[in-house]
Image 1 (cartoon, rainbow, N blue to C red):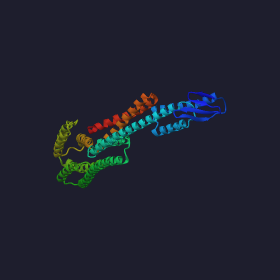
Image 2 (image 1 turned 90 degrees about the vertical axis):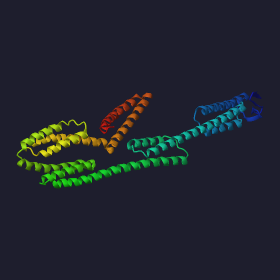
Image 3 (image 1 turned 135 degrees about the vertical axis):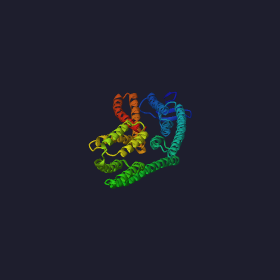
Image 4 (image 1 turned 120 degrees about the horizontal axis):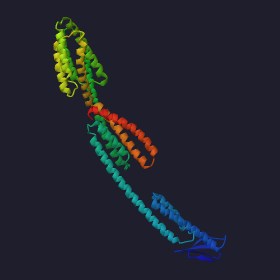
Length: 409
């Protein structure tokens, strides 16, 4: 018979292990000496020791789930309770009991952490909902729209809450966005309606102007053209695709009339030479308005000059294009300044320009972040590629910002 502190082998080859509850049969050994039997079952014990050690390390250093950890503990405990090894089984049970306590502690810790994360996510989503509901009443269409889109991205990055709470908060969030979109749509629909009304008014003015273009009632018709011009300016802007065509037809009709009137007057006006001198003086006076720094003052001054111009009468036919061309150049400069002022204050064009600028700025900021991340990771090839893309986007952004300056932005 052979023995050691934790086990023995009797004369029949039966192997025993000593526990706090007394000796337990390990198994039967007939293949060799008692010493070899003890050595074999002691190696099996050491295997359990190693297995427990590895499990302890996994529980302490990895994100092994409590469920999987408990299953592994139960598996080892079954082997310990089967006492098919020779060694200090009670010590293994103590280690397994402590491991159960550690797993339970980790379970509670993770449960508390999830609860904390859920509370934080709830507060974050409630804050997003509150901001979205405030933005839903904003008239800053571009800025508010961009901010709402950013809030959606933030929402997507937050953990889900319980289904009821998450659905309720999302319903409020979605309703706020829909309310804003509806108000924005109504706003621009109203602008479109105003432009359509202006188009109809100018169509009527063009029709009358064209009908008057062949009139020979010079005084009355010229006065009516001046009234038509006032009505034109009061009508507001039509849609861009219609505005220029309508203006060209309107001015063309007037040109036909005034050209005919000028032709008749030229033939019967004996004072054309003096008229030319006077008009050259007015053209010089008008040219002093350039460059235009005060549009309102320039418009009023030019109107005053133009009224005196109209009152003078005709000039010799061969001199008319040159002197009238000088006045037309000043008039075109004023019209261009008016067009620039309209573009600068046009909310739709401004919104598009600002929207493009915002998108390009977001793309530039994102690329800069990606470049910094690639540099930090040592990926210089990727960073260089991103830098080339950034250079292109930055050039577009600079161009867009330059264009935005036309709107005073």
